[in-house]
Amino acid sequence: MNDLLVRAIQASDRNWVAAFVKSHWGSEIVVAKGRIIRPAELAGFAASKGKEPIGLLTYRIEGLDCEIVTIDSTVEGAGVGTALINVVRKIAKAKGCKRLWLITTNDNLNALGFYQKRGFQIIAVRPNAVDEARKLKPQISLKAANGIPIRDELELELELSE
Ligand SMILES: CC(C)(COP(=O)(O)OP(=O)(O)OC[C@H]1O[C@@H](n2cnc3c(N)ncnc32)[C@H](O)[C@@H]1OP(=O)(O)O)[C@@H](O)C(=O)NCCC(=O)NCCS
Image (cartoon, rainbow, N blue to C red; front, side, top):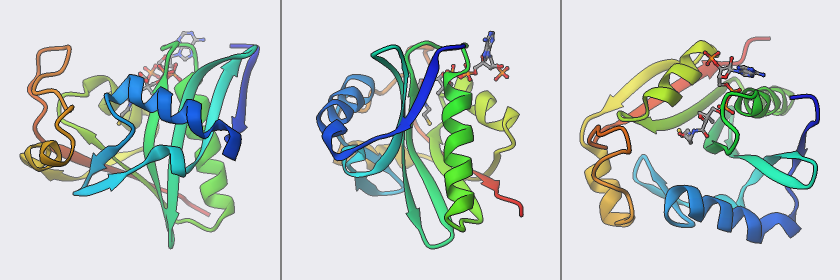
């Protein structure tokens, strides 16, 4: 996409980030690996075309690790997700991180393909972890739109080479 702009989110973006996350994930919170995370409090990048936001990535850095907490594109297959991954990869590396990682779920076949084609590897599977997540976030559906039960957490990572 020629006119795709990716910029760091600012404090003034918090409200739309919270609303965007809620509209995509059913709540302003994300639960992964037993933790409750509020993406609107995190650093991130917004992708836009003209004035319209068409993608959002939020992340957190802890030590040498950078976790992608959310990534969403509203115009799929046009390069938005790739642009967001490239920018977080760059910033994580610049901040000295050695690893980019994230949690996804077993039903998300599209995301699993997307990440693996971009160098991420599945390094852990936590069977039935979503049952626990649902206790903290009841909005998590039992079944995805593709009919697959949402059940297991998968951890993927990408080593950030020198
Ligand atoms: C996963 C997700 C973020 C990917 O975002 P996206 O904007 O569709 O990603 P891209 O457009 O960069 O890449 C998707 C495909 O489109 C292709 N593509 C990119 N630009 C293109 C273009 N201009 N023309 C045609 N195809 C293009 C890419 O090559 C890619 O295919 P590949 O994976 O086979 O290489 C998006 O599908 C999404 O928001 N999913 C819902 C939320 C979600 O599941 N998030 C992850 C939670 S862990």
